[in-house]
Image (cartoon, rainbow, N blue to C red; front, side, top):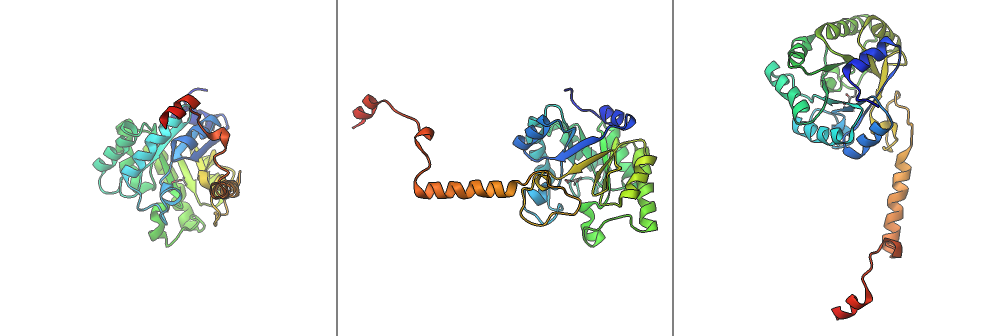
Length: 276
Ligand code: KIV
């Protein structure tokens, strides 16, 4: 399989073929996601929630993101890797945004970046693209706006906010984005945006009509015991399996049954005898 590129994704939309995308934050999982043939790996700033243990994504830094992007790109042979620009890495100035986007490519080895926001981000996006860095947009329930939204709320349910999302998608396409993530928006609105936009839409909590889907890998593999959002389907339920393994290890260590002879290295008797 050849490396997935921006033009492969555009062709997918043109040929009515769906796009698969998942998050990953480390080498081992990225290698498995890649081997499974997933098109795009997003090193999401959801890293903050699922890997670093924060309540939201706002504390994630550029250095955190670069560290994990480097691990992911080492595991991804064919999947396209997109680095997620964290809070404040593209808000302060356009120059800083271009520099930070460039770090994902130069230091992280990613092929593209993603950033949140609609029309208000157009000049920033154009400047990043001008530096030859492909940009994926992200509108709807954008987690970095959690305080402005007053919580994690579905967007685009009333006329005004639905119109805003349609206009934002249009602005992102015109700015040159190669794809747009639609997060937490009603399915019929996502269908309309998908039909009206020439670039692929990738949905999360946005229904089945998007050109592709993305999920947070820890959620879809069932690696959490706690609450997961309505839009997540658990394609595996690893948490009980992991717990079983951990408890089994504890029991065997305490009982002295691990390690067994098959886990031990040997030394020749004559060497051992000469030691005493
Ligand atoms: O950070 C992330 O994982 C994301 C996806 C949910 C789209 O932005």
